[in-house]
Image 1 (tube, rainbow, N blue to C red):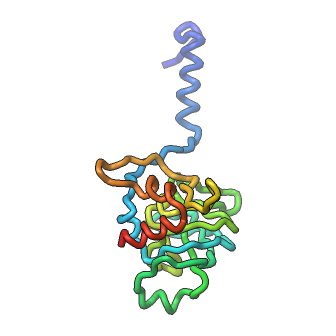
Image 2 (tube, rainbow, N blue to C red):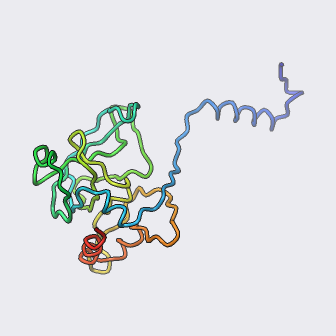
Image 3 (cartoon, one colour):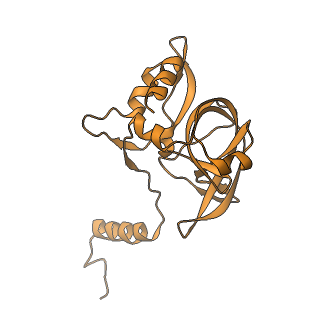
Length: 198
C-alpha cells in the first residue's frame, strides 16, 4: 500500500514517523522494582558484613548466567568487620585486610552498561556492605543496592545512608525493610541492630 499526503494528514505522518523511528532507536530502561529486604534477610545471606573503603576498580566482560555482561570488580579495604561467617576456602583466597566486591555494570572502552538497582561503590567513600559468599575471587553485595550503605554525617552523627542507586521497592506487610531501619540509626545502634538480627 502506498501512502500519500492525501491519505495521511500531517499529524498522521508525524505519528507514523514517530512509531517507525521509535521502534528502531534503542531506548534506555530506567525502572527497576524489587522486594524490600528485611534486615534479617540481609544478615542471613551475608558471609561478611563490614565497613569498607573502596580503593580501586577494574571492569571487564564476564559471562554470567550464559550472557556476556560488564562487571566491575572493586578492591576495598576492610575497616571494621562486623560479621564474618566461616568459609574454609575463603581464608586461603582472601587477604585479611581487603576483599574484592563484584557489581554488575561499568564501562569497557566506549561501551557502558548500567544496572539499575545495583550498588555503586565510589573510590574513597566509606560504606557498609553486606557481602555474599566468595566466588571466583570476589563477593557480590547481597540485595544489590539494598546491601550497600555509604557513611555520612547527619545531625552531628555518623550514619548509614541509603544507596544512591536503590530501585523502586515493594514493601511487604508486617516486614521492616532494612533500608527503612538502618538509616534511622546512628552507627553504633545500627551495629547492635545488625548483631541482634543474626
